[in-house]
Image (cartoon, rainbow, N blue to C red; front, side, top):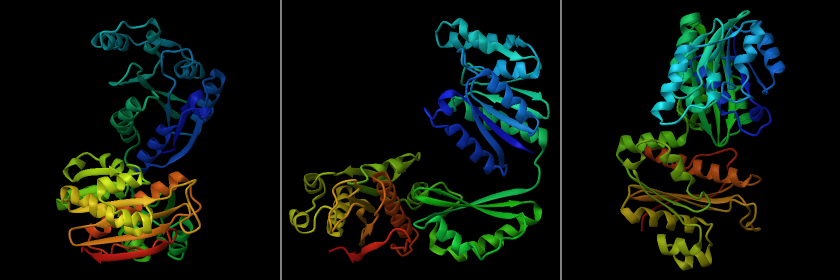
Length: 430
């Protein structure tokens, strides 16, 4: 099956908004073992829409068209495909009644402009949209089925999951056996990973793909066909042996998701002390439902005074070693853990930049500490030549990886090829 996507809208084409729908859709299809073969973006111009619908309908089996179904004058997709296919627009009486009921339930008067959304190309099959006022629809044009969806993510995603996916499965069957497996790596660049894996020739039908997305590189292993699927488990073992501790999770989104699950499974609690990350660590964790089971508190202590008053960092430590130091991170960590006697604590303090660095402690110098009930660990790393955002993101991931390793009873300190450690220390509580 040749699957394509057409994204519409001047605001998407001009970069005024980021097209998150396209990325989400491509990934959702990849999870099903279906590869998107082609994608394009077109503005809200009748001639351009008609041209691209006609052109791609000769190449694809299915085209997901996103956007352009609203009630305003620049929503032209319905009219454009009708013109391209040479059919009339016909009012769908059932959708007119749905719209009237939809507005009535919300105690709003329906604007006359919404009646435009009741018009579908003759012969099109309506696709229900329980979340909004614009119906989707599908229509066969030349070789392809064109499947039209609204651009609002809260409407688009349920329609893909509940209606588009069942449609393609029903129309085209399961297809060849495919499997997708994902290895998430942290602390190593794409080229370094490729160098490790390059000599390992994959079995026929299996391909590797690298997807860098700060702070990770995700390795996608795609097995196409029965024989490739059968060879996948042994090949995965080969990859695991070659990568070792570089892999931080398998078939899971990120370190925060994994740490979240581990803390819940083990019934452990956590406290956080954040300086340069400014609440990023806590935000990553509370994205996941159920984080209240383990996250006791997160202290954002940006100033020296806050580090002293809230976490008990000594004035001598700040005077002698500074706020960005192993000593300060350790005291922040112990202070945070002591507040509610949590099982674990993490602390991060650093210079995110672009200003504030010096010769001894340049921008990108970060100290990350972990403490449990018996021991504590700290490392100072150099994240040089990186943006402020990158320093913060990588610092948060480093802290989570230290905790992950401790929860799994592994050595807390790992060797990361692009995160050089200047200092590492492990000690018992005093």
